[in-house]
Image 1 (cartoon, rainbow, N blue to C red):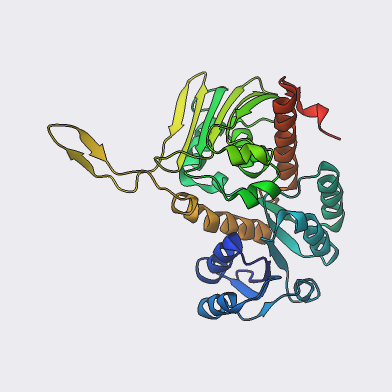
Image 2 (cartoon, rainbow, N blue to C red):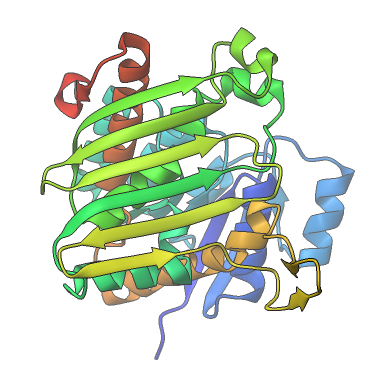
Length: 340
């Protein structure tokens, strides 16, 4: 008989709603008992009613104090993640937490220590690992099909910058945007980053520079297995949401290109046209959000370590911190320099 888990969700913003809807409608053998959010308004109440949420509360302690709830899905703001993970660990509840775990290395390490001592399982939500194209890339590398990886190239370009108010509190481009790419690079290379050189500029919106951030960046990574990584980012690609991965190895190369919205090509005397790539990240990655949660619950049922785990979350933040230091100091930075 398949184990059925009782779940509580903390945070009902955009990502929280996606996870809640997946738990209710796309993942079997789940009982979603409570959704908690600090801002309950009429729109949220209406959404909860339409989705079939049994209970909506502004107090996350109702989740931690409920002995029937075995799993907590954390989708709240980053500054609350470690607090809620620690509370869940103390209550012996397994945790799925959206990235990043935190922006402070010491807090992350303290939290992971509490998690380890509690015996609960922790998965961090790097959903791009569960995109079918990137999974296939990873499989071709991990199986040895393309030999030893030599070069990992990632292009990750957003269609438009986020609001300035968000950028002010995001922790910077390397933490709020490129963190997905640090994780993808490690995932594809099958190795940890040893050193990084990052450079950036403000080429899109001067207001982004005024609040201390950048909107365009390139990073060069050196992995412990000898491979080299190249990542390019921009906050505005006018043609859409540009997401590509390539791994070049000793026996070949694997490439994951952008997914077109359809397979239609239009041929005329003047040109050949195809429709634009998806514009929004939810168009590109919606399926991966459900897939990652399915993987998490399958790991719980099999009593195996879910991936990406807390250590992955820590390593990705370390790379982000090293990238920021590299950009500020204009020099290569070893990960050991920021690993406090």
